[in-house]
Length: 196
Image (tube, rainbow, N blue to C red; front, top):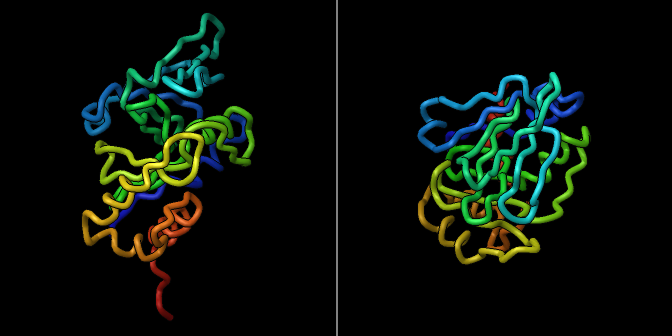
């Protein structure tokens, strides 16, 4: 199972907003073509409408009026090296942890708050704690318990849809809670230990 792991990059980028370059992808095609709209001279300073159609508030470093970017209007964005995909139904950002089979995402608002508050303490206030999808452009299934509807049937069907997900199914069983899925996926994404 080939995967790309994005988690933990955030830890090196949060303190001091060292990785604050914002790049917007209007569509999945723009992401594939590596053709973002780079917001030179702007940094993320706030979030609005956290329960639906989240807005990114970008403020010019040199001063001036802020710019609003509605997540519902874009496919995703990068904040430094961290990639976020927008969950299209609710317009909520999702932090991309792994790409591959399957893609795993964590609650983007929690990660963006860690960035804004310069902390490593994660707190999910609204939205699913995680998501799974076949790839970066397919339907995102809500993972785990949250204050939103839990898509247990959708997640179960996704994990049964291909033999490549068998190891993940065995690892997490039938209870697709956020933390066991995270541990299982991160363990699968680790490079194998070389034999002595």
